[in-house]
Image (cartoon, rainbow, N blue to C red; front, side):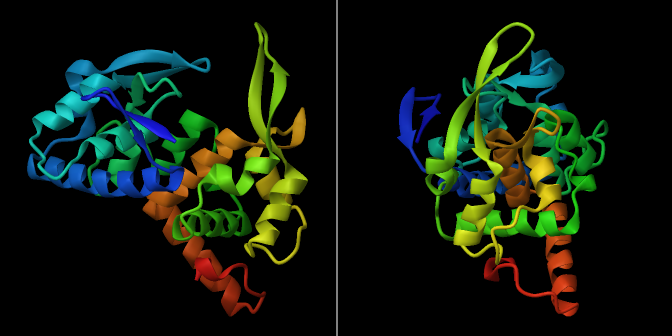
Length: 265
C-alpha cells in the first residue's frame, strides 16, 4: 500500500497494520510534545481550521499540508516522514487525504489526557462522525471487535489480506448517483472470524451484524468495510474501548461461558 510523503512527494510502501502501529507511536510522540507546550489540538491548529461537508455532514477539518507543517514546526526530532504520512492516513477525511478530521485528532489525543474544551465524550464524538455509537454496542460484539483488532496487529495481517477474497463493490443508488461501496456478505464475515479462531462457530452474531451493516433496513446482510475499518481503528487507539472489552472478556471467563479467542486474554 502506498502512502504519500507530502514533504518529499514520494510514495512510501507500508501495510495497513504497519500504518496503525507507526501512527500509534507517532500520536504518542506528538502528544508528549503538546503536553510540554501545554496546548490542545484546537489551539495548535486554530488558524487553519475550516468547515467541510463530508457525506452530507459538516466537519471541522485542517488541510493535510498545514497539519504536517504545524507539527513539523514543533521541532519534534523523532518524527520521520513515514510517521507524518501515517498520521495523515489515519486522520484523513477520505482517500484523497487533502484534509484531516480535527475531531478524530481530538478523540485520539484525549487518550493521552489532552482534553479539548469543546470535546464531548470519546464514544459520542466517534458516533457523531461515523454513525458508529460504541456506547450502544453489546459486550460480546466488543469482545469480537477487540479480538479481531488484536489478531490483525499481532499477526501483522492487513485487513484486505484477511477479508480480501470476500470483499466486493456493491452498487448503491443515492439521490444523485450510484456509488460502488465495499462490502462483505455477513455470512462470509463470520465464517472468516471462525476460521481464524475468533469465534468457535460460524453463527452470525446479530448485534455485531447490525452494528457493521451497510444499512440495517436495506442491506442487513452486508458488512460495510468502511464501518469495519473505523471500528478496528478505534479498538487500536481508544483506550476506553479496549479497557471495557477486556473487562467484558474477563467477566465472561469468570462466568465459565468459554473462550472466544486467545488474543483477547
